[in-house]
Image 1 (cartoon, helix red, strand yellow):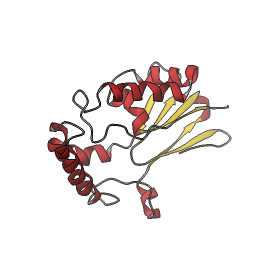
Image 2 (tube, helix red, strand yellow; image 1 turned 120 degrees about the horizontal axis):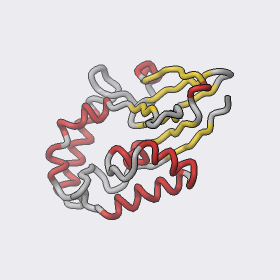
Image 3 (cartoon, helix red, strand yellow; image 1 turned 180 degrees about the horizontal axis):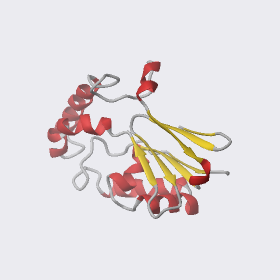
Image 4 (cartoon, one colour; image 1 turned 135 degrees about the vertical axis):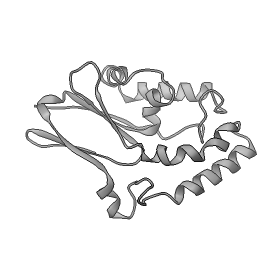
Length: 173
């Protein structure tokens, strides 16, 4: 979430989302809540070793999702927006002066995969794509990468396509 007040931006990042703040420097500020990935990593070994689209992969994915459910919205686990309003208390939050931020991008993990998983572009290039070509162009790149590796052999993942949403925000001073 991003909220602009008169002289500052308030931001909140929770779950598998990413916020990018274009501060005018070479590299933008990237804020992501990586607690899900930290919890998930040790439980992905079997899943990542199997070819996507197979019954074995489907069973490993079911077990993986079930295991992750035991860590959701718990101390020592990861937090996501849900029916429990206390999850918001565990969000990453801060305030940035509007004069220091020219633009911002809000991304689901599927859109952030252009950088974080597939390494197709840098965070700076991602901002440029959003500004010049729009969110649809970014998501097209992600979908092309996913289609080029439908079974997760190059980029192991639990599912062929992840949700991919991106919003580009220009900040007014």
